[in-house]
Length: 309
Image 1 (cartoon, rainbow, N blue to C red):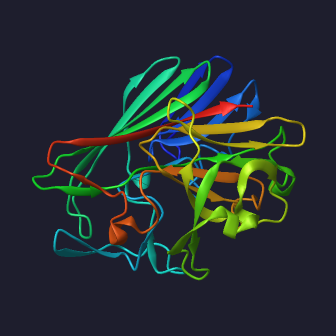
Image 2 (spheres, one colour):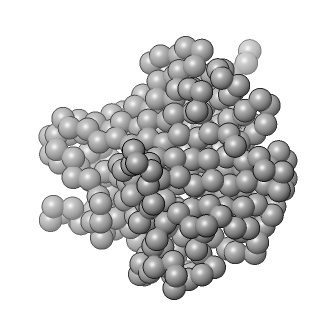
């Protein structure tokens, strides 16, 4: 008898030239193709998700220093799940099992309840919707506080975009455009924020005008986005052949981490570019910057769109 794949039950969508595979563990975006061309670095269904590829980041994105924070006068201690940096990373929902509420040819909705636990004593209902439109894959995350007191919440995503038509091409050869005016400089040993500077002060990190990534090492959070008339920010990556991927998001997310896959995981080293829209910056549980204080029964949400170029 066959069992459930390690990544959880699969949902598949097909429309407008796009093919999507979603894994029920963490409501993970496991694969995304356009006319057969991969737009993200995925992973096999019977594999435990590597490097947070396609993960949903709730109730915080990025790192929390020492896993320790204070909220409304109470101290909390999270599990340290990245010992090297002594931080709690990318929230809790990524390893939860989601149930499939709705599945159609071009749409899927998954939901999970994140129970209260030591370090995060609030219950959240997390709903993740995927919808294929002519302009790409729309992903929407809704978080409802089902607790009896306000809860701290941040939301993020973690797709690894691909430039060009080959999954094994190096990011060095890709053109990156990320029109943001400010960048967070982090400590090299712990990847925690130290200060925010104008990108003019760090020319190697300035991608407001598209240029080759070359040997630039990226693991930086950007903000101060140049937005379209309807309020959308975007990051694009293109290979030498002109093909690639775009991710856009609205004003619910003012931050985005960009990471050039420096650590070799599952055969990928500098061969994919993580672009992570976030509603708050790294270590927001301590700084409080853009951290949502969600009343009982209220919800917060965020979303993004991934398109083929």
